[in-house]
Image (cartoon, rainbow, N blue to C red; front, top):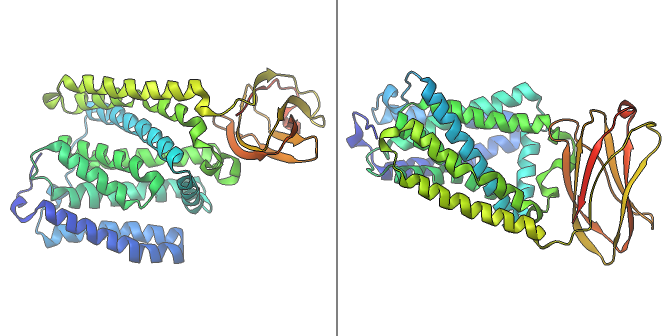
Length: 395
């Protein structure tokens, strides 16, 4: 890795000390600002990160252009960064599924964070505050100031591992630790190989922007149904692992494009082994259904002729009190629909709107008592004339 002209003044221990100071500031001043001033406090926290990075550069006498290197970006740089980022993003999704299945309370933590970030902001402010600001400020302190102290380490993978762990810790979140650690590792790899912090800033912005767009496209801020805490993650873990099984190959391809000189064929073998393990685990969980009994699995399509008439979609029996996951998917329709599940004894288990955009899918964990249940579809006026296709799974 390219060293700074004053590298003799920097040392890995100094990097750990700087990170410890960063965490101290984040857990004291940052926490105070965010608890008392909300989103404004979040903005101020990010600005503090940037000030700390610049102050460290000044104190150590480092050149700004060396600690925060900016170079011309090529088409191959963009292609390599895009591929390696998608690989890291898919692997991050898989990690969220694993953590959520092992430690379900962490899902509520993610929902609280989403409520804090998106509960009071429209799309554009969220894109700037959640997308752009961290991309500049967090990259300056992590890939700029902190990573500079590790440039003397000869093994690149050691730097990537350390920086990934530090970035995961900095987010102080069980559910996000591995996903942010993966992102931190990927960004650090790009900085090490290309020595261009502008690339990592763009990748960081792209990553956060994807999350912002996903929230606002699915209208997750306005319905409890789409929240992670409503998921029985164990029942959908196979899907999460299936999304991530191709990630190792994307990471390898991205590495090959960004750093062809240091690429080794054994990386492909390692990627193949990891992908095979992820795929095998995913199929095993999906085939076995996560160990949960299938209560209902039906797909149907019908023509909406009258919005005042609810459609009885399916029925099923619960022979003993249990908790089940309800998954509903809608296709071939643009109108508004609600899904109800009512018991013969008068209980209403769920009465939820189908998301208006995106995949038009929701999942909800709920408790069922012994009873006979019926699933109803309630269309709105704007659905008349459509022929929606529903898939409903209860297990």
